Image (cartoon, rainbow, N blue to C red; front, top):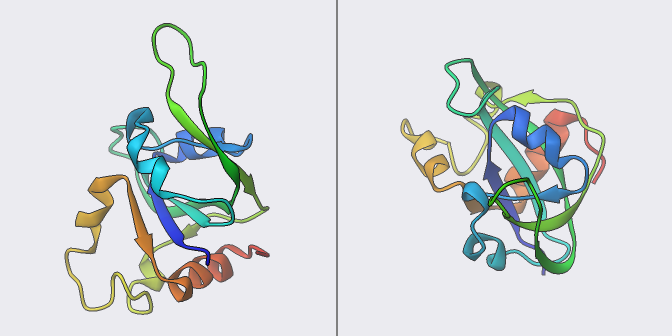
Length: 139
């Protein structure tokens, strides 16, 4: 049975992943081990750039985990982050604000952004479907 996830990264980094991979928490392996082939993943981007003050607060990419492969990518220097293969679909970026009262993980929760600090967390299928619809994604 598929699970559904929100991964958190700057829009700049999430868009780079559209080449067919995902990485979270500065390349840590452990969070990616919780994900399985067929799981849905949506990236939420609080800002355009990492550490940026340019607030975006939007879902930027969405797709499904392709397989069970967990591997290290080569980024240059000593940085070799852990990754998973993802098949992203064409989708428009969608702000979270219009969805706040509809999503299970944000409904009635003033501090909904707190869990974003973990970099990756599981959500319900209805929430995932709501992002997909808002993004015009066909999953």
